[in-house]
Length: 146
Image (cartoon, rainbow, N blue to C red; front, side):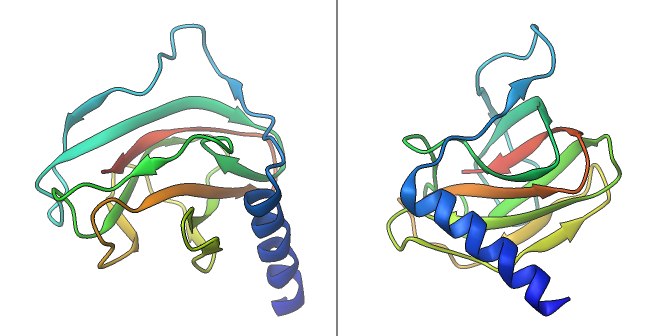
């Protein structure tokens, strides 16, 4: 199982470093571009960014695509993540730091409407993307803190 997990880390890191584009489709035409709203996460006194709903086929993806990223602000010391929808029941996520060209370990998430902290003590101005791995086609929607 460790070898299997390491293989996905290598794939995600390669996507991140070499700029392979993701094949993310918008789930609905009504899904708008990112918008900012007040965060309610206990670890964040700032803003959260909405993402989705997006349909991910089985595989490993980088979101947002290479050339775009989230950037932390002084509002949050941790990167927060909350899913309002996980259609397949589970998703594996890692935080990939643009400047460091490295990613955190994969973490599995199954619950919706719960704030998770996949990365802690992140300096202001850190640019990051989310590595996403789903075993079957999954529609994801949620928030990340900035």
